[in-house]
Length: 396
Ligand code: PLP
Image (cartoon, rainbow, N blue to C red):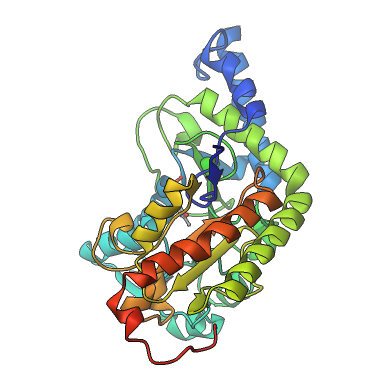
């Protein structure tokens, strides 16, 4: 049976064209981009060509794009690099409590080093209020880091509004956004978002894993992330992974040309999936905002069941999905994002995230809609809490 892959926020399959573009750089064009003979110059040209493709996708200058080992490294660099380079200006960082762990755990580490971090709450849809950002700024604030869209519930944050507030401050405060989930899904232009730093990851846009980029606006005071050779304009040392960089560049080029068409297709499939679930299964909550959400994201909580059991049962039907509930995240606590939007523990445990991709079809969606109610029913039949339920509330 064909696998139905609906975990594209987790990772995406690499495109054939991307692999084809990479292949020569893994074989005959193996040169080191720092060498001066033709093999090296060829690698250097491929490197700069890819930098331009990444820059085009996010509306940056190629000189403002720095290759990293992925979204996690980009987030680490943005936070640690700004904190360290600007500590003479202050020690306060503002972020939100629904960030990816690449940001949250880095902030926690910075707290241990003496920085002060404000973790802003979100409303029930997962929105960070620009007013909250404004009211949290102090004379010591050096950095604000708010994600562009949440990887679990898909809510798209008002980044441009927050960016404008930060720019209006008298002192320089840097603004970073983790755009790992938005680049290649919705238009992302650094100028329109008023950001100084922006994180991108290749494997979320059908490129290879272990490669990403950090946009660093010209004039930003940031510490190099890795010291060593002069690569990446002396900011991120180490011989460049040319095949991965070429693949990443190709993925950016392809997705840029298809952005509008993909947006239309994915949001249509997403809405069909959400409608089908909400209309056919009782005791369901839609997580995230109904419209201000990523075009490929569906996230729901089913009362009276555990997300992991649901995933295992879907896997038996060859459907790949994800859940923000306990075991999958490696902790006993349900997802910090679902708790932050105010869901009680018992409901947060029953979460299911389905994230669509370019190969998904209406038939895939209909197959999931055919299978899901039966699995949910079966699991609820085994739940003592379901047997004790009092009334049938309306879905929200
Ligand atoms: N930030 C967000 C919002 C993500 O969703 C992810 C990956 O899931 C990352 C950062 C980490 O990216 P990478 O897997 O490239 O390290």
